Amino acid sequence: MMFALLCAASQVVARAGGAEITADLLRERIERTRAAGGDARPQLLVQDLVNEALLAEEASRLGLQQEPEVAAAADAERRRAAGERLLETALGGVQVSDDELLELYHSTSDTVRLQLVVLASEAEAKASLERLRGGARLADEALRSLDPQSRESGGEFGARSRFQLPPLLANAAFAAPIGQLTGPVKLDLGFAVLRVVERSLGDEQAFAARRDELRAFAQKQKRAFVRSHYLEQLRKQAKLAVDDDFLRETGTRLTGAPEEMQHVVAKVGSRKVTFADVAAEVRRLFGGKQAGHASGPGVKSEMAWALVDRLLLGDAALQRGLGDDPQVRAAAQAAEREAMVRLLSARIRAQAPRPQPAEIEAYYRSQPAAFRKPARRPCAHILVATREEAARLYGQIARGAKFEELARDFSRDPASAAKGGAIGDIIEERLDALAKSEPDLAAALRTPAGEVSAPAKSRAGWHLIRCEQTIPSAQVPLAEVQASIEGRLAAEKGDEAVRRHIATLRAGARIEVVPDAVLEGFAG
Image (tube, rainbow, N blue to C red; front, side, top):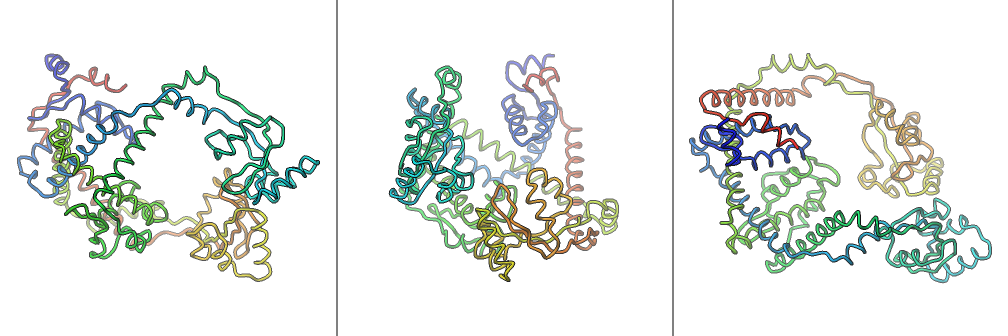
């Protein structure tokens, strides 16, 4: 009871050895765990923090704070936190007026349902308008529309908010009399003829109910703009560049030869940003994915600039003395502790016994379903925007045109087009689930082997599908998965070694934790 009373005054929820775990630290861990989708019960997380405190205390006794990777982690966090404090200062004066809130509200709350035809020239639009006024069918005029949605839906453009429409089209749509033909309206794509079918305007009562939400959103948007502008100024002052030519050459790869990984893609003063740094940042943000957009040159360029910005902000912040800010010092100390815990845990794991061949084989035999390849079909597709285009290509294939060549020339899916349309293996057991959301596509994927499906519609567009013979389900040989099993078992043995080490530390330490009834107050 005395410890609980003391905690209420000092905001300490646990003590482990010589370390104190504060309520703020527990709240931060709860928020982080919830964001990651983990078990955020305070009773569990406070024990995790106790374990980490004991490991950090031992790591400090062993002098691990002197290790280069620990010092680097602390310095990087000090610079990052100082940079964030600098941005907070720059963004502190961001305000949003009532007029701006009202404009934001109406941009999303005011909606219209339109019928639309978009033509290439003003003369064509005027001629179309005259034909419509003379009794022509909108669906017939829409067949020549440059807008694919209105062309495919007989002129129906659907419901749109102000925000979703180009400014000139929005102005016309919200001013035009309902039910009357209007135009031509100049757009980036051409000239529009439109009819407003329905219109709805947000009212004052709904605006009042959403005012706080809108203000928060507007402030976030403004802060993002100010942040971007501030970073742009820092970049210009430093006269920096990123080696985008090199990043383009790496394609979607996040690995390479040692000299490639150490290639400098940017420099900030004497500090270097290497390809290895960029690859690590991509893995951190995208869960280690390496393929397609998640690791393409554009993403890697963005990550390189993000690393450059971090260095620039850190430099600017330290020059202003923000490295001594109490919050910054606390963040750097926390990063140092976390790095020491990681390093000590890695050393404990490295001392765990390696899995033996008999253990690997026993695990393989005990998990037959985990090491069985399901039945699958290698498939290819051609993706285009309209049924008409798909039908035209289908006819060409029927007359002898090569599927692969048409995929390379016309498919809107660049990743598969470069491979002659190949999209890899389709797992047959997943087709039933696909049929619920994309029935036409699922049916096309069941087309007899070697044949090209009729045009099939999906949310992405129109497909022509060609699949090969089904490859039967089969057990994966042990040799193919031995390395992955060994890695999994090694990780388990390493985790067990860390748990045993923590148990030893706990047995020799004095640990005090506030009662569960107090911790339950953190669960809300």
